[in-house]
Image (cartoon, rainbow, N blue to C red; front, side, top):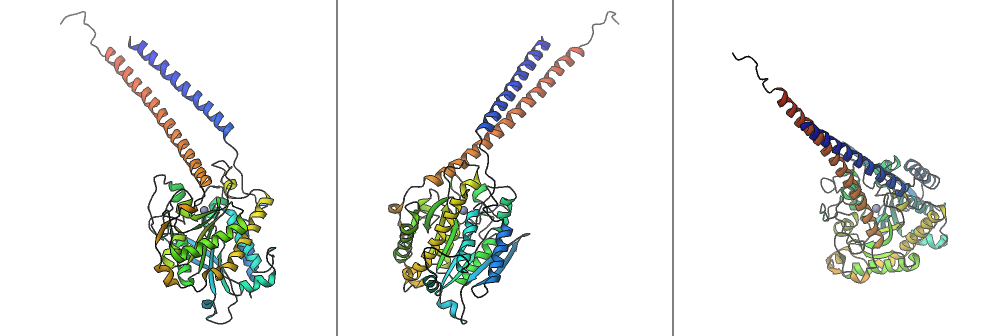
Length: 435
Ligand SMILES: [Zn+2]
């Protein structure tokens, strides 16, 4: 009887294992068929981080009258980072810098957004006059640039970029897994319901990361009038705030809004979203650089620009999602956005006028910006794409648990059966001879 139960159970378990393997193989086949191939980095179009920095070094070396370069270093708990800063501006006398309008631009804060660092290089080429800007003649460009000191951070997240170049094409965080655009102190560490540590890990504390420390020190000492944090993933012109559905009020809003509207009108052909990051993108971002620049450093014009996104790219195809993959688009993005930046350089002095930081900070009241919202489908789509990956990971765990369950069932069955047979064998044999 026990033997037949054992056999029946064994056959059932074998059948279940077979069924599971069959399902898994069908699942894997359909997964392989539906899973699109991932686009690799095209090094015919894009510079490696090493080549990009070498190109910039050589450019600065060729134009010492226009460009200077420094490398800032910081380290924390065994993790170090270097950030190269290129400065454009003819410093005629010691206090000259303070009388000019100061601009700070950062590129490549997220490793996977390679197109942004290419834009940094393009802008530096135009500043050096080795490349021309088709939309502006050199004389009027020079008269614009005479009034400015521009600091360009061509690759804020060099360590994270190296992770991407080593094959992790979806990595946006720094070399030890912290999102550098969540590591700043304004509203730091707050997590939304759909928080994903793979994307938005804010670090163990505000400014825990050397890269953020360097950028904070740079901004605090330079006190820029204009800050632009350049990203990709969509096309948008964002002003503060990222952590709530509000913009600043009063004069700052007037300045920033009219500048962005002008830029959008000239360069975006209605493609770009305009508004606060938090109000427009479809989720709130806590601890961002732009919110810190506006609220703490007091930068009157603080922006985040998103310069390119491919909404049709599959969720795992990050290189394609964040970067153009053909020469025509690559070149169009760089030409359009470099023209955009030089338009901004021309407009900012007019927009700011008799700017006074103190008066602007006093007007820091908040209003809703619902009227500027223009939809947020693309970024939402990206978020959904990530959720699908999370779901797939969940299925893998369920499969593992199912296998463990089957294994333990088999073991229990063996123990049960061996106990039955043991109890049978150890039963005392009736003695034929009484004592
Ligand atoms: Zn980004």
